[in-house]
Image 1 (tube, rainbow, N blue to C red):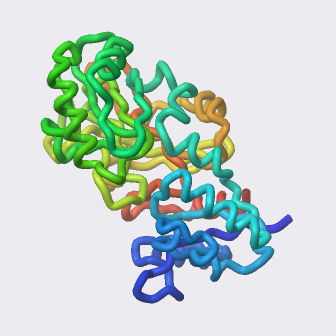
Image 2: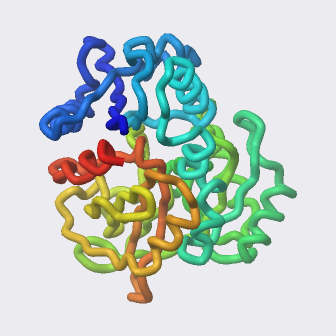
Length: 318
């Protein structure tokens, strides 16, 4: 049985070396006896998948990716190019999309994650008033909500493009959604999501918000709305339905946190994706833990300083 290799993005300034963000993972992989190959992330984003994988040996066998986030369509091209070279991507294109985009994973986690509705969009066009009114009604029609797309929020523009204090105020819903779509521009993924706002336990006490954005190795906005809103979050890494690493969210790598995972394995298995992450936060009222985000494990960032040897060893033993 072939041992999986791991693909990392190459350093744009030195294509023979891993991107500096992933150097420590590649070094740890070598210490574990694993093998890695390099791909050109910029070429992947540009739609030149064959060029991007030219450094991956032919007939390279089973492959995992650990790198920057890719749109689902670009990942599909990536997986196809690897297959054409005789590789075997261990995360399929449909599997990547299911874990990467909220509509793909929401059904498996419904009831354990804040209620959400979404409106598919074409390009960077905001939904109209009637569509937004219908979406707000499906979410209950009143109370606070978060605006995001299928992958990311604009939490750094909290009041401007993320938080809706009252869904019944349809003018405010339209204003926040419009600004969100404007700021996302060409990077808007899939459509607009309205997600019920929930209060979570905050570091140091009080309540904070995990808004269901994403920091999955993209260098962009992620969960909490700055330090004053930072929720206590855990990130759990799953392989074939088993937790292989539990740690803090990358935003707060020094937090010590022990989430209650009692009900989560069954939900992960229901999703049916091999390598995923779940971000969990504890409700401010003490009523339990919630899944605030699901992600494809290949593009989910690791907190600095964590011992990832068990995770990497599990991947190359899969």
